[in-house]
Image: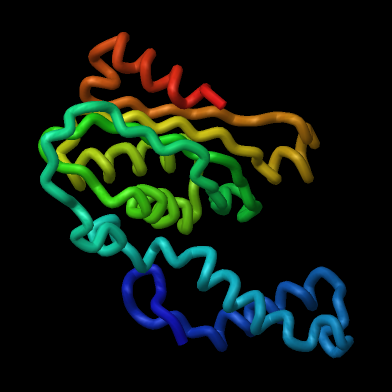
Length: 195
């Protein structure tokens, strides 16, 4: 048993049964060696891949916010992102770049990656995910400004549908000074695009 999306217990046996039904429906033999334990593995995988429903940004930050006189831009690039598209339950993956300007508080650098994971570990669309990361970081440290750029490949577009393997979706969210000041936004985009 694990927590469900509303904070209660997820009935893993029920999920396993649903997975058995799905495999049977597509014509698979549930008794063949390769599939005997697949429903249990699928239930565990679903629980792991949707763990973000059982987390809040406050929990993953866990108090790792520190007073600082720094008021320069902080940028972390190339945070790996793995999520499931809510339309087809197929993975999308890529990189996330996050920047902020402090207003007296900084956040532990690993906590930025944890905020990304918290929201990516839910059924998502990339547009919303980008905005959720930006707003959570802003709210966590009352940042003067926040910028988030996400570049992802979507298997729902690569493996099915239009089958375009070389496409990349890029989304951005800019808040505060990153939104209001073109020079700040330009500095962020320059730092993100270096390397």
